[in-house]
Amino acid sequence: MKKILASLSCFMLVFSLLIPAATAKTSQKEQFLHPETQSEKAQKGMIKRMIAQMTDREKIGQLVMPSTFDDGSGMPNEFTKQAIQEYKAGSVIVYGKRTADHQAAYNNKLQEWAEETEKAIPLIISADLEYGASQRVPQDATTFPRQMGIGATDSLEYAELVSSITGKEARAMGFNWNYSPVADVNTNPKNPVIGVRSFGEDTDLVADMTAAQVIGNQKEGVMASAKHFPGHGDTSVDSHYGLAQVTYDRDTLDEVHLPPFQAAIDAGTDSIMTAHVIIDAIDPELPATLSKKVLTDLLRDEMGFDGLIVTDAMSMKAIDDNWGAGNAAVLAINAGADIIMATGNQEDQLETFNALYEAYQTGEITRQRVHEALERILAKKFKYNLFEERTVDPEDAVEITQTPAHKEAASDIAINSMTLLKNDGVLPFDNQSQETTLVAGTTYINQIGEKVREKSEGDVSTWSSSSADPSESEIGQAVELAEDADRIIVPTYSASVLPEGQVNLVQALRETGKPVAVVSLGLPYDIKEIPEVDAYLASYALDRWGTANPTAWTGAVDVIFGENPGGKLPVNIEGLFPMGSGLSYE
View 1: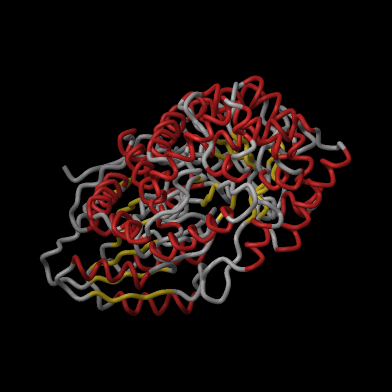
View 2: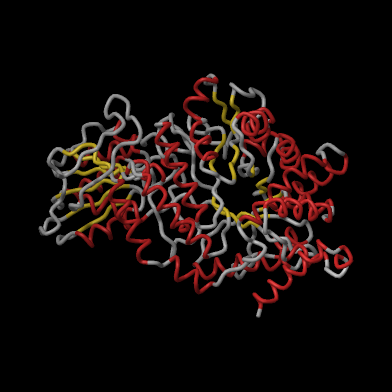
């Protein structure tokens, strides 16, 4: 019955457009609830009419994407409701961890609040899902290796499959927009924020995989967003904490960093996210997010992108500490951004809405600039059918995120991403022997130890440091445990350079004379600090936040106990291993 009424409503709307006398009989909300989308020309006309009927507050609201806040029950709170209903937010970004049915109900509530507004324009609900929908729903959804792990498989089929499964699971929970793929070329091994989030340091590899992931996401009804334009891969500053600046010339920008974004555009990406980075070759004064030279002159005019430009989180210190939430929002819109990601506290979010509204009233932001952004935003809401498919079924969300085939695919991809760089007769460990195994390190050691127990017939013990930089006395404890072990696994982890304490731990355990296999959980560059190790496996499991990735570390354990590693190094490790390095057991 509901579908029949919706179809009838659409018919009435088309009829009203043809016969002026009927227009008065169709309510304004009816036109926004069921817009006619039969042709591109008709859609553009409808969008212009919708914009003409919107108040200034409604127009500005569509340009702001606040992050949501939760109440005591884990559902969105009254402030978020106010942002949607009073300030007319056109999209939201969701953080936090939930189950699949909870996330679906959460997103449904957001859409219900939007539908209760006068125009009933649906929200675009977004999230960072770089390594799968599990980034928000770890209990149910599928976790994939980080992008550098995907790069190590050298498989475009895997790249697209990862984003396709992610899109399918995300859409089932009510997400319409994924801030992925990361299109940054990680040319700086000490990059403190990109690292394993990048496919690698080869421009062609990153470009091809970026395009594949754009296609995978969008064919499942989830908008992709290549980030961070025009490139965050050569920075030495994390823009969450400071303002990064790159000084390479225009040729380097054109030849190394821009091609993945052009590949994303050519593949049809519907959005691109900005970088809070000053690109000297284009604009030595303003970060890309606030620069018209970058967003309009370069991205729009030179590269031909006509999709949505969304800023990175404006609460990051690179922006907030230097320009403030409101002023930065005005600068970004005038630079060419369509949507401001307002991720700050409640005060910052209101400042963003109000600063944009006031700038629109005074003419600091022009009607043309606002209407251009609105046309793009509404066009995407049409494209992803949000007017007709606002909410989802929580039971379907659980079923789809728990699809066994998705987990099996993730496991296969993980094993084929594992990159064995060194093996002096240590690996694989015999999983049928009664030999005892010690797992010693600093990060997720108990969880990794459980996976080792599942594989090993012999006893397994674990030792974990209280910090990322073990002390001499702590290392002594690990060595004492090693005396009773037959073989040792040392998972290392660094977000930039391997801490000295972890280097000392590896060396002390090697001196016991027991076989030692090192697994880098984060960056593959750890081996530069411990080149003498007998066996070294890169797993690309953890980003700079150390976010858990059980699929990747399980793949590493599988390889340690006999599964054939399939990965090839997608970066250069200077002086040790060139790109493409990777051993196998066969």
